[in-house]
Length: 185
Image 1 (cartoon, rainbow, N blue to C red):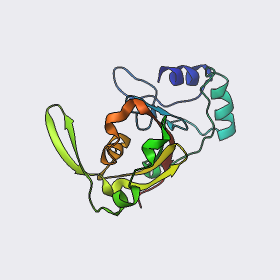
Image 2: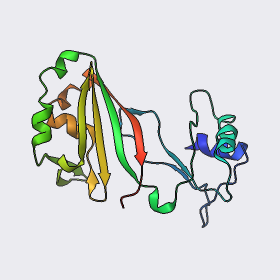
Image 3: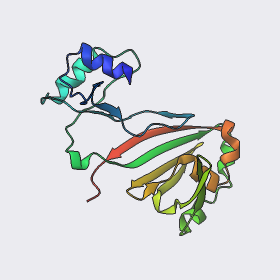
């Protein structure tokens, strides 16, 4: 986050600040990535004090960002429409043979896929099937489309667990390739 705070300050972007004793810039990266998951095409949310053309904002920020980090596009999003609702992950397998015996069709035909989440010694069971939109195999990779709803979401590790692949973490790499934003209504 500091890299974006610094870039907005150096690029003289009129960013809104939080109120209170220790004000900070109103910017955030939507949906933090889990440990071991990389991301491309992530979403940075900025609250500006005045309207700036998207091209100008991109140009000014990119001139201040380090190599390897680039703003690719920008658009104004109304407050009611800023919720991420679809995440796309690509899971690349070092051994394509692991994908040969997967029964994705059977998994998607199920009405419920129950997982248990543990947080602070509290266990919670959750049906993740309503959140799995699509699973596809392409060469040596698996593409997951996972919905986010007000009721919750699935984690890519949970989908892999339901496919009996969770114990083989060293044999694949997970990358979030897309965060889609649109309204629930």
